[in-house]
Length: 117
Length: 110
Image 1 (cartoon, each protein chain N blue to C red):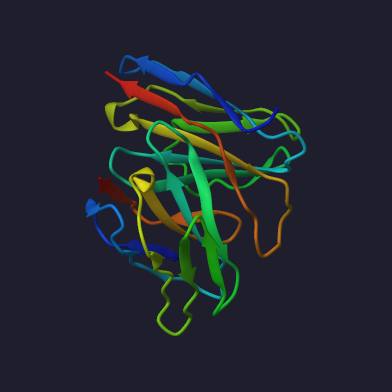
Image 2 (tube, rainbow over the protein chains, first blue to last red):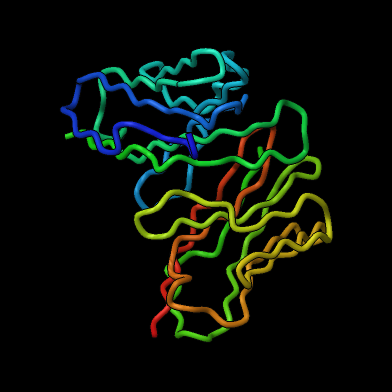
């Protein structure tokens, strides 16, 4: 597609439920990133994929969070047993460039706004 | 670890005023530096970048110079417009991931 897409755009769930957030990167982009943006704050890195492997998961806040990616395409971020502090906008970004290069411009999707009641 | 510190907002200016949003960073090595902008209701967009010391990034009248000696990348614009109202994020490219500042909300009044 023309850009990074994410679905759903909005998700309201009850505390304790599981949610899945989807990201479709720009076709051909090898690297994919997930970030979280809490209200009034900057973006926090969650996880990074190179192809379908995740060399850096250091930002995942707890073992309730997991992510997977199929080849060099869609990625799913799963949050189990959601808590109110999980409420945030979850942003996905992709880049065409591989590991070890100086400059990787990241192209961002519109985000999924998650609200946990 | 790597970190980015931005001046706190919100910032409110009148149209045609001069804008500076301060950004300083802490990093090992020589990261690439970026300013991203998030307009109301839209996704994050790259505004400008600089990949090495003394580089000046520029776009849409905005400029920022990579200053290694002061570890800074301040965003400037000589004459702001109402359409510049947005949230601005300074970021550095760490090891394959972006590290963001907390964002500065800018409002320009006509």
